[in-house]
Length: 151
Image (cartoon, rainbow, N blue to C red):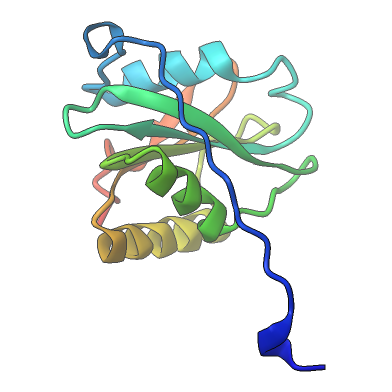
């Protein structure tokens, strides 16, 4: 069988934004991102780890969000391709990523630090700014940006 003669299917994409730009929420600080993320996070934030991303335009107005992954009690797998696929489809200029720690420990793990650096580097290649990485629970959050760790 010749691989070049195989049938390829076309990928169809639909994008619809019904929110006028004037009504889109603008994120200017980590606490605003936390408040928005808590409003969209499911009610099982203390049961298992999930990873969400907020996608924004050049004016830091939120275009939308996506749950990238849901895992177990102590971790979740994040595929950078999935993070940036959604960013590219939404024509996002920047993003804020977030995940929860069901344990309530707000300190980043070594895996959190490695993932953050990896996604910052990927964003630079694609000209998509990774503005922050939040670790959150029901009442509190840790911001990489607030701690000067987004380089």
